[in-house]
Amino acid sequence: MRKSDENKNPFQNSHDRQIGETLHDKILYWLFHRLNEDHLDLVARVTGASENEICKIKVEIESPVYGGFNMRSILGFVDLKVTAFENRMWETEECESDEEMEEEFYLKEFSGFIEIKSHVNVGETIRQIKYYGGNPWTVCGPDNGCREILDSQGIQFIEYAP
Image (cartoon, rainbow, N blue to C red; front, top):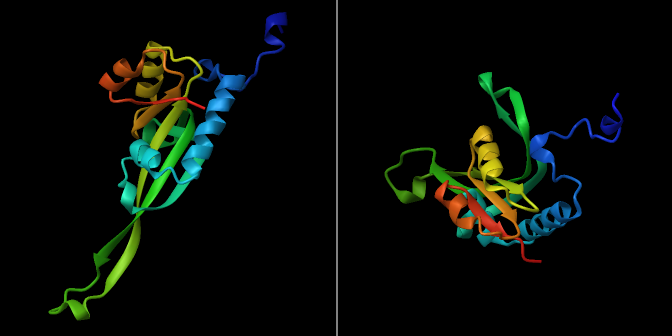
């Protein structure tokens, strides 16, 4: 083993260089708490759910992103996966009057991914997100002028403002 490899984290890949950095973790904790403290406007923005209809929120840290054949391969891990649930209702029987109609409720699920960046390298971030594909994506970090470019690629930006 080379001397330079001794301290290298074997689980760290090129997309995760910021994990363990103090600012990255501060941003992660800040955003995690905001999402869990009923900031429904933020949850709706990240997931695409209707702010007024959200009844439950689930926030996962380091959630796997699947891809490949039959979506069984783990492509990487996203910093935060946010899922919002909305109460929905459907009719289970057709009836002649509203009084006879039986209604059943179910939860509709909306998910979005958030990638935390202590410094946004625009090209690398866009490449990472396009590789993962899927859900609506949001990047959170200090604003270094990247918002317009990310927005042009369909990626939202949340400015870290403690």
